[in-house]
Image (cartoon, rainbow, N blue to C red; front, side):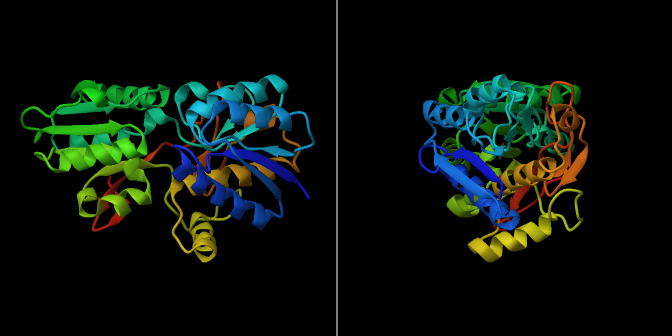
Amino acid sequence: MLTAAVTLSLSGPLRLQGRQAARGLELWASTENITLQIVDDAGSPSKAVAAYREWLGTEIDLLLGPYGSGLLRRVGPLASAHGSLLWNHGGSADDLARRLVVSIPAPASTYFVGAVELAFRRGLQEVVLVRGKGRFASAVVAGARQRAGELGMATSEVYLEEWSNVGSLGATAVLVVGSFAEDLAFVEQLGAQREPGLIGCVGAGLPEFGDRLGSTAEGVVGPVQWIPQKARPEVGPSGAEFARRYEATFGAWPSYVVAQAAAAGFLAIEAYPRAYGPGEIHSWDTTTLLGRFALDASWRQVGHAAITTRWHNGRQVLAL
């Protein structure tokens, strides 16, 4: 029986996403008869680094990365320096790409591209980018700013703590990237003020966003890495089949965080018996329940981009 190991934030500030990723990997491990070890890193880089450093010296067959770009930024170089593959499902900041870190998620710079294009189609004149701290937020904003420039739209940027709504936002798209809690608070605040032409946030990609905000979530757009498809991919089950398995096991519909974690597992278990080394994986062009998988020369994921959804009548629907 193969063994796999991962740290996830079962507690701490990223516990919502960490617990979802854990469920995705638990379902994958039970399906593939994998012995899975999960250690709670509580969002602590030192705890995550300590666990992976210990695993790198043992007979663990498959190493999966932690959830969160900040943690992956610390763990990735360890695995790379050791010469070990690390299957990254939870870090999407653009600067994380490096040899032997096999990134499954679409880069953060693609997260708001669809929202900007939607704003352009609606005839909006400006995109206001409201950002939290960290390189993940910087990458999301940079990608949105680039796409807006290509479309000839004006952009402005402001930090979350400096935001103040002055004047009409009717011809403006307001796009927010903070923590999940910050996104919730911002949308609640903006919902009580004059409605912008379009509002989007990264947190709106999670089902819990609608659960927490109710009718206030109506119309808000957000990026997801995955929507379930019936088509059978080359690696692992279809998205629709995986969603049914997850719902039967956990009594809920899976988020994209669940799906991208499972996709990493299915890729890892497919590559292992084939004895794929860095060269084979680097040139591997295939499909999973998440969509197309392909890496560029820097090991950056280029096979697929984030998908834009919109909240409508309490459900997430495609926005474009």
